[in-house]
Image 1 (cartoon, helix red, strand yellow):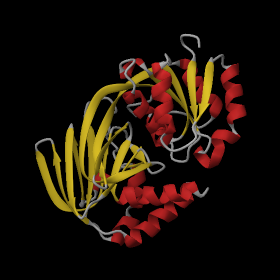
Image 2 (image 1 turned 120 degrees about the horizontal axis):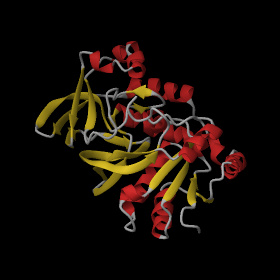
Image 3 (image 1 turned 90 degrees about the vertical axis):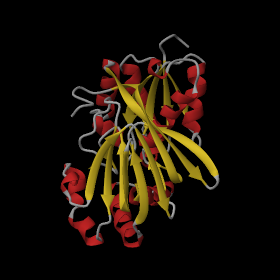
Length: 314
């Protein structure tokens, strides 16, 4: 390994197996761009965490993710898991082959492989915030780092069902939208207590979005004012809402006007605690995790990423 050789972590199953189907093309474009690299393919959920952590401890400091938001999330968790370098001493670029691509929207990462590789070659870096959430899976408390958005309640239900369909080879925007509609028919509001720094909220909630970036769910803008390096979570709380009002206002999820709805409240904070009765579920960066209670903490300016021009503050 040369000192600055890139480690390319490839999820072969991302984007209806585009990770493996398009790998020869992607690797050829990397070669033609003069980017030195070694590639490793993931074999199971969570594998990218271990790959990133172990290879960083072997000396790699430049990582390229070939996958989607979930693969990026695993690599970020691997960066926090390793003890060789400060987390900001590792640089992460992305070639998107996933179905959601929401982290990339924030940072102007093109969908085209050639264009994404040109961004990596340009090497324009940005140090963004990360979050860590503690949650439960049965009786066991776990934690997870994330760099985009955590969804609690309805988002988590839709993500869980969408991920099951992905495992069956069914994905895409129409599949996600159908899953959203069918989930809406069965979803119930949850009595929840939320503490954001010194502010406490008690209400029946439909959904809570907590994050660093703006987009989730394949382009929904649930945190339209998020700034990725301000040291604060943006929080959008959708309180009890009638189901037909959800359908009538879906466009607001995409155009950034969700905060103008009367049942929506927005906040910012560094530390967040959430309790609920009954328990409520969680997803982060499109990965289904566990259930409440939750504790969130911001980790300011802790992850160095390669971004496109005009990225991060659009």
